[in-house]
Length: 127
Image 1 (cartoon, rainbow, N blue to C red):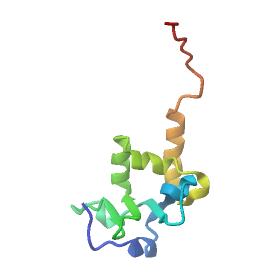
Image 2 (image 1 turned 90 degrees about the vertical axis):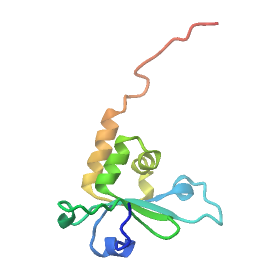
Image 3 (image 1 turned 90 degrees about the horizontal axis):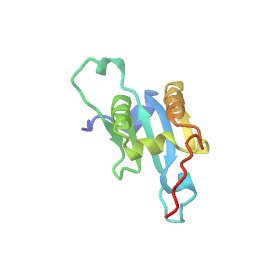
């Protein structure tokens, strides 16, 4: 559920953004002349909202080309292996505009959970 009172400008002016990445076609070198620039990220709510009943999951522009997920909602989606969130964590480093150290910790945890390449070799039987 989005709160209509929150805007991207408010998030930026109050320094609430902790992750901001270029995503979509521009992030992977697939953009064409007509491609728009997609920005995705994560924000934290001011402390006063931690104890209230207000629920702000996402703040985005009218076309959803720029969208920021609230940190708690971001983690909830991450726990469900949401592909948009997984893509955001795997954004190429040169497409990351801002990454707070808090989010760097999530990436470290994600990397630690990934098995090293070629750790399991399975020999397939001939048919």
